[in-house]
Length: 73
Image (cartoon, rainbow, N blue to C red; front, side, top):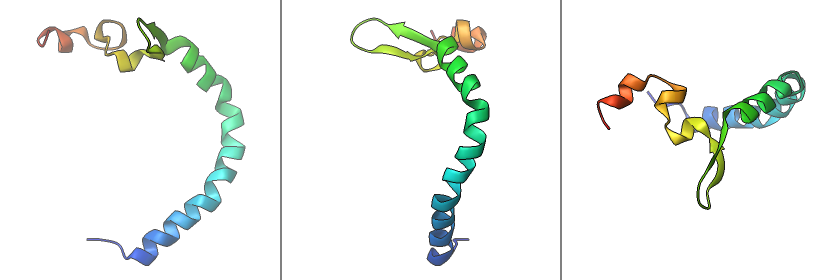
């Protein structure tokens, strides 16, 4: 059921080595989409919170099924 600690350690070590190369080749191609996501889905909350992702505000009327929220509130 559980992997050996040596296998987990090797997987973590491989991840540390491979992730920078993966990000180096894939991140530049999708950087514009990432910036557009933050521009489109950032909202400003009152008070000292500032800008947050609109999905974190749990506004189901704007970002999801409003019927899911209707029965709880």
